[in-house]
Length: 123
Image (tube, rainbow, N blue to C red; front, side):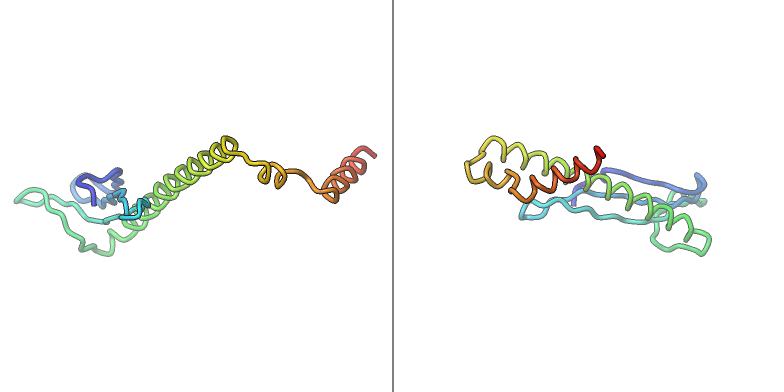
């Protein structure tokens, strides 16, 4: 796990709030995965404290923090996936073989279907 989270999401008053911390990690195989930690931060006479113990009034805030963490991670994963897709498309066009070009060509049946669709739209 990395030392610092890539994102922290907090809900609640300044002296007693819920925080979701999100870390980005790499597996040994090179895959990216994410981990989260939900914690409660509060201030008392001795100063600031952190705990994972939540009271009933903290649960809605924890739910919101979890939802926002999920949305953030989901967006990050979608961006990563689109980058991978773009990279693989670039590789395909750079290393295009005759077999790949033939595979991208439309079959006779597909051409006929396209022609029928365009004729039905034109009518």
